[in-house]
Amino acid sequence: MNTAYRFIQAMGCVAALLLTTTESAMASSLMLLSPAQVAGSWTFYVQGAEQDACTVTLKKDRTFSAQVSCLQAWLGRTPTTWSPTPDGLLLIGKDGSQSLFLELREAGRYEGSVEGSKTLVMQRAHLQSVH
Image (tube, rainbow, N blue to C red; front, side, top):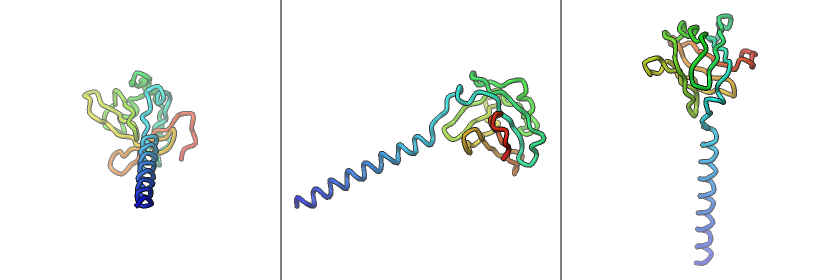
């Protein structure tokens, strides 16, 4: 009985360790970036139409540079603010409604669907190699 009790205790410890490790890994993979971490110059373009790219500055106060008006062609309206999420970034319209959710694909690159089947890419301006 003593051996069985120790085995059960050991299995409980292993289960707790796995649960803690899994929770930590999931939490770190969905880390919320601060506005200061996201702020800066970003290049926006639709995949396949990179020649129509525009560069917009996302400011630390969650507003945009004046060049944000270039996004209206793809979004149907000009976003006025933005907000980081654990798995991406929201572009938000003047009335507070979501203009577009951009999913974080890799460091410095977000993607979202526009006009049905087109992909809008948002890439750090200093990462100019277009995928």
